[in-house]
Image 1 (tube, rainbow, N blue to C red):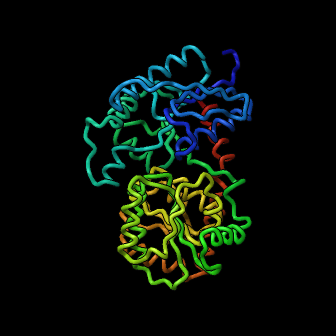
Image 2: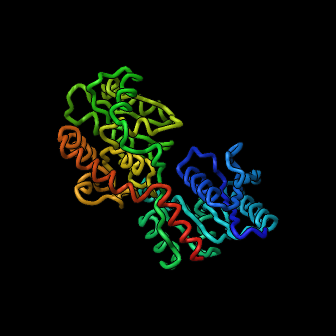
Image 3: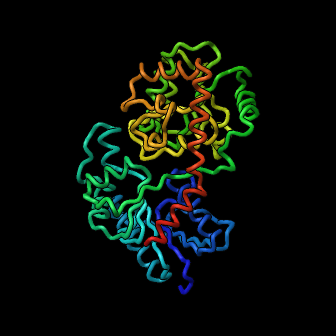
Length: 372
């Protein structure tokens, strides 16, 4: 490839349904719109894109164990690099050799904090990460939070100057504070709730256990609310019925709305009076930033990378991880009943979010690439 602006982006999953794959797609489109030719190499990949500068190549998954599948995917990606000969290779945790390595999860830390157990050394994903990171076959490592950067330094002995922190972004066309009242009315009417209701929101693409939904449900059941306060759960999980049974046992079925998976979550983010992300561990947590940008007050655990963005009065809504049910219940009450406080938090967070849109993310990514 003679074009001086060619980049190959590799990841097993670029479906657009996970936080990591959304980041990859947004960055790919920004690069393409800026004149780059972008080669997306993945197993799960969009059927088509609306930009001629984006070329998609599907790589088959070969192997039996998760480890061998990752190794073979990496090898096939390397073959693609040899054929395409891009100027830069941008891997997302599934390649052994690349110019820029972006990580989206800390598997060992997640197990230690989220599940309170040490991940076995034989774990397939852990083995691959260890081999990939200790080998050091990358120019720059991109972490999506300081939380992740600290873990990479302490666990893999990565030099600090080889790591750049690049917080994920959000679409300012979708996640913004405009027309909040209208969005809320639409959600209330859709789920047949009283028009003067207060909505507490929880949004996750999956893995409710990691995001600590159980603690939120218990705290919601203990909080002293008036009748018209509802918990809205957006997303799905393979253990969804267990959460529904918990809600039933607590006698709060009429207070919880199960909205299921939603392709577009911004109408919900705008409609919430309060958004809660109580995960014990989350490498970043894009939903937190999306809620902030929507002008919604947020309660978050300090185990969530996005909590690093909080400052001023919003810091009072950062709870120590692991979040205790009674602490979260008190925080819910304070945010729901102290309107002035809630609005001040929301305003502070919305202002902070303006520095972390996808436009800002892309500007910082280009600086990392240009610095080589």
